[in-house]
Length: 185
Image 1 (cartoon, rainbow, N blue to C red):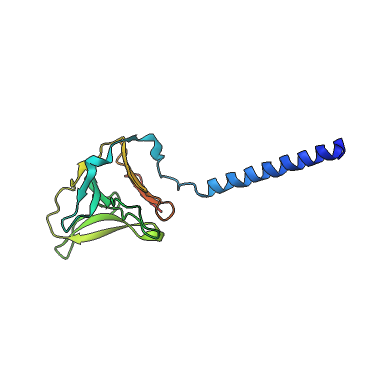
Image 2: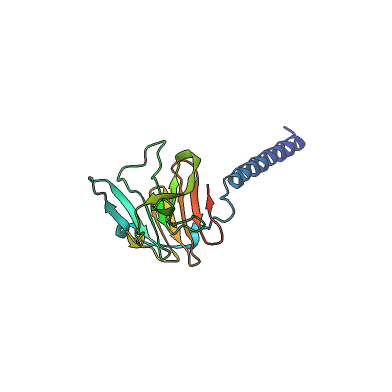
């Protein structure tokens, strides 16, 4: 093979490699998190062992935590890997920003709630409950600036009223609750 032919093959190989790298880079941008969701890497990790509890009806394990903002959250903490097609079922309730809570015309009380809807992501809602509504402090306090992780879930609390969780069991689904506006995906 002539020197010119070798040079042409090398140039083509370099061009193909550059194109492959460019295409791979585009894929990571497609999985970008929505605007308003925080970078969870910026929070200090805490040991999850202090947040694990068992359910009232058997040996099921849960990660349960409360926040300084009168919001409590819970998700499954099985010892086995999360089965394909399942999530860890994150649910938070309490004073969810932007979701009405308090007494209702039916003499029930409403509390704010965000819950996992599987492959559809998360949904904000309110839920009727008995009055009076107490405080939402079930579970160990997760302080501002901290995060905890277990299997496919990471949750964090920010200093600005932020409570954010991400579950990667069924893709990237999560939420960020904050006074300036909530994000669910």
